[in-house]
Amino acid sequence: MNTIGTGTYGSSWRAKYFSSNLQQVLRKALVAEAVCTVDRSDSFYIHNPYSNQPTAAIQALAGTYSVSAWTVTDDTLTVTDEAIYGEHVFHFERVMNNYNLMMARMDEMAYAVAYGIDYFVVNVLCEDGTGTYTTPVGGFTAANTPVILSNLLSKVAGFSEAYNGTFLIIENTDLPGFIQWQATSGYNYADAALNNGFVARAMGVDVYVVRTGTFVSTTIGSRSDITNSGHRVFGVKNMATYAAPRGVQYEEKAVSGKTGREIFAVGYVGAKVWAQKAALIVDITIA
Amino acid sequence: MRKRYPLSPFPLTSPRTNMAKEKSQEKSSQREELWAKFLESYKAKNPVKFAQKEAAGEFKTIPASFRGEIVEKFVLKNGQRVGIEVIS
Image: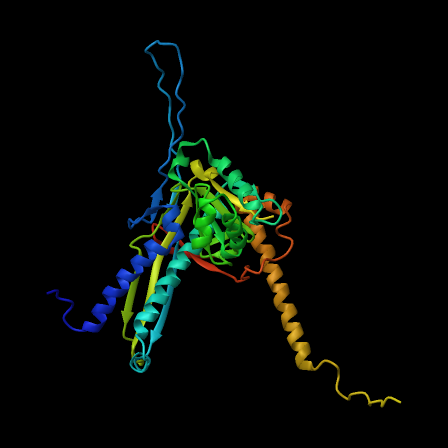
């Protein structure tokens, strides 16, 4: 039999539930996890993993070569931000509810923190990607969607990195045109869309949908240079790094003068689009 | 013949309405000021994208998502706090 703590059994169980639940939410629900390389080390600085791109010489058989100088870029990802939320559940609230209030609040908190991380990373990707593309007028309409996807794919095709797969992050308000196009395209594909609804893969691109209001123009945490209102992002997967030291942490404490428990959840976050690969992340302007 | 009512002894807009109006005007001018500052800092940080987006007319109106707050952040060095900086 497992030994779970020695004193407050209830809080020990909750700690286990909350910690595992947070990690599950973090790994399954986050768009950032799916499109970036994730660094879970406790590092404050993460150094640029990319060096310059060499060009091989093509020459008649000679058996000789010249030694080239290669360089790295002195650049770092710094973990500067945190997604954090706290609240207090009073004892009477817990006792007199006819559902498990603690668990319900923990689930909500886990999703709130996870969304905060996504909100930050998605906006950093969109802002720092140096590829640019403007959609035809109307944005993601049924007629425009295949045009947009084909144009975006051509932006990153030909690079070996494209074999990592590509992603497109749109808001839920872009979906109607997308779904209408899917339901009327081809045979098997249209049948799949008609049976199941939105197909999350189109023309080889993994499409992720975030809620409207995710792409913003405002200060987010330490980043005061985010101007993504009316923008979306497309790119090659694993080209940017997102740092999440120790995932999401949680703490539960008894507070003087209050019954029940105060709980907070925090996730530290940093994100970086590395200079060498920035062109493989495309900032889409919706016309 | 239509009955004529005497003019109301009360002004058309109450002092309270005027105060609310002034307050909202003050708020919107403060928001515009913060937006201008935000754009100024954006121009310094990312001149290439600033020029692209300005040419596309993206900064003509303040987007609804702009929170318009004064934000402070810790200045960190090796993960330690070494000061506080106003970033927008």
